[in-house]
Image (cartoon, rainbow, N blue to C red):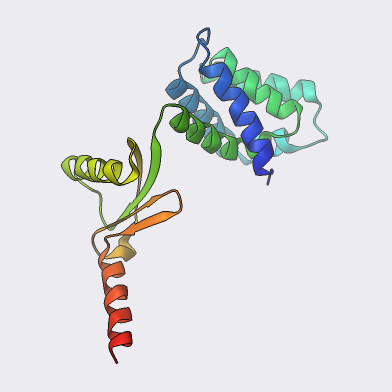
Length: 184
């Protein structure tokens, strides 16, 4: 695990390059390319071991990364970012850096992130209404990330920053239990 300050430093540097007017890659493409590379590496135990091993020469690792980047048709900016991570033995933090990079982009574009959990997949109309309501609560446009959590029974929970909005059946039942316990 890499410290959050290191993760944020790398994510900020990548955001600065990707968002510069001279950038050859759009932010959404960079995220997609980073996630594709991370999936490729995590999909192969051998590849993950080779890239993590201090016994493998840096030049060999760079060659492997360039091969993968070519097959994935990655931009030069994203490939160079991954090479820098590898050179500085920070490649193990790639998933953390992708998440931090995506969060930074949202912040720079003025979005607030909301993590939404629902018992079942929400219809598009429900997602749009939820987005509208949460944007009102947050005072800024909201970017939703959805997770299905069958334990909720029904309804949704939404987390914006440290604030949780619980509209789930499980949450309502817990609230009723609490009120009944106080009433005695």
